[in-house]
Length: 384
Image: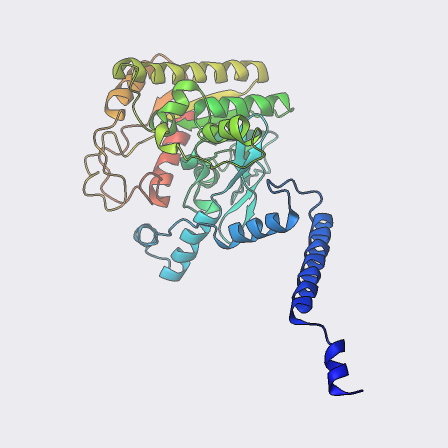
């Protein structure tokens, strides 16, 4: 065959381009077909599985992590190395995730780390019980609250419920056996705890004692408490009002700042009075559920860096806000609380505090947790 004949049998440049385009299209259809099978059970917002895969991978690699501030940990745990404190601070941030849950809208995501463990609606404890062989009875004690009860930024054994067990067995070695459960959840406040507690009772739980530690979330996340909605309710509303109508193709607007702001259409004193009223109504409804279930309740309003803390501005860790609604609300809570049985105001505990009561802007240090726990145990008046 001559050279001229060979050139005639070779495809031209245009033909090669067409063949490559066809080949790419075939490969794309093949990849899309495979991905559609693999992702068949997934309901992403994109019609093409390949685009959905790209979106998923992009979100995985661009996930924003919260900054880790290890310095406060070093201040409150001077006996631990910087490396250990850095790991603790990092684990606290990594574990701060939530998932949807019925009735209460959300709960902590399960987490199994070196220092922190969450399973279902509870935080693991070390220890979680004290057994007295001479006791013929065991008291089941449930603890409820927000992030301070949960123990944000502290280890499992540093939380209030864990320290409660340690202090109880030290003070009452001959007392009744106890089992303790930590239902504290970040951002929860008294109304959401009422819903959680009621659901537990309806599900067959029968605690002997329930302990509620509240105040900061009820009056700091004021918009939530005023309208009795969860901290993340704005997310759920956007998903239902926009997401379901647009097949998920919408930009989520973070309006969390609105949870802290004073209202523009309600007189401030009227607004704050309603927050206090709602708080005590929630307590009464919890007490009603206790009457039904046979549980004995204890209610504690917690110390806040925004109220009666003379050392606040010198404290290197806590928030420095001074013009807050707590200066109006907490005196009312203290006043009205006198008429409510099983209620104890702990809001003055920071008055003489000179150490490091906070591990971050808002949450308690391990040392101050022990002091709060001791007050709680004192007020519960166990018998030997």
